[in-house]
Image (cartoon, rainbow, N blue to C red):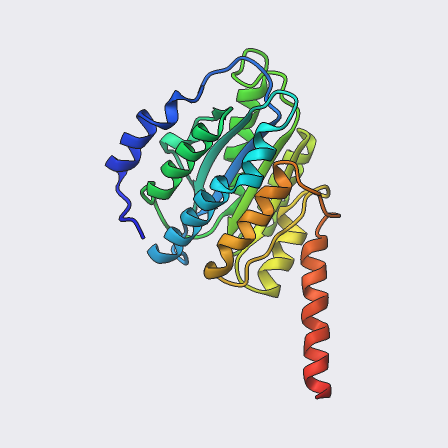
Length: 253
């Protein structure tokens, strides 16, 4: 596990990665906003597991092929951190990735990025921040003008204010954005994301704990970048059904 420092992250960001285009007045195949929970319930080790999981997913050959295989051959990504509120960081800016080298450099940034902030859990603050940045980037004159495939990818281990989270979800829907979720925990948090966080065209890819996060985020990003898209929420429903069937078999035994 690397020791994360803001200095090292910024050094990487200004060298290897930002040969990638941060300003491109043209549409991309996908504008993806990663919304990551850094609230107090997420320990330093768990934060590291999250960031390692995202980094390793972006290094995956299948995901890279998806990111580069669209009409434009480009994917734009940014990262929003949230707890009680969102936290501004250098990763707010969308980075347009158009080669495997640029994607790997972005993964290196994630792998080394210092944690920002902490506090309670307010998913809507991260979601609304992502919506604002997507709207600005894809509007007339924006760096991603003309992009119509916009996905917000929310990961976290807790719920929040349901009414506020639903309002943020509905705002995303009104602006033709999809919200998918990666709830970390069990049935309760899975159901919270299904009911209050993801859009009707979105899905969840649950992780039972932070150790399982890496596999879950790889599966999730594969779908979001062009893999087979499940029915809304179907991954969670299948997993819950399998869990119930397994419990029934155990009771029978």
